[in-house]
Length: 158
Image (cartoon, rainbow, N blue to C red; front, side, top):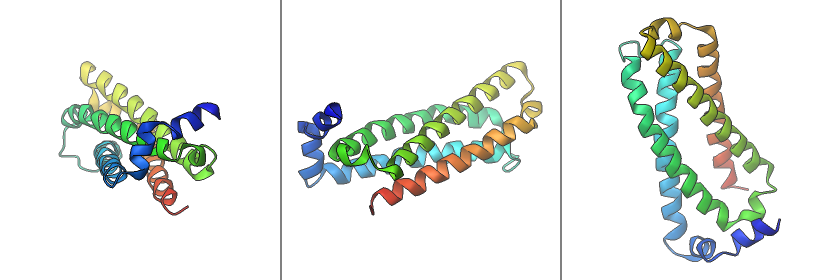
């Protein structure tokens, strides 16, 4: 708990907490990163599940690079938001659930990305997309991001 207390007492956390612009800017960046990462990964997941069949997997695969930029923005802004109330968040089951879902969502997107990259290289994306395992992965990705977003919103009201 000493590290968490140190983070919360840091000058950066203080700026986020008391500045008229610090917290709103971090929330805005966090929302932007979320929209990019979750939006693109959900579109990919829906494509795997059979929606948007006119969009080639190769196009969506290229967009995943942008999705990871969104994830980095989310990670950094989320770290700043965490710092502002670290001792409260670290023991909050809603926050911990959110973090678990974010980690699971990111891992699932990375696995899907790797599977699609391999399929593109082998020239059999359509076959890979028909895989029941990939479809299950895509469905769980959507569930993880949805739970992560819902619990993230709950944090603002607890």
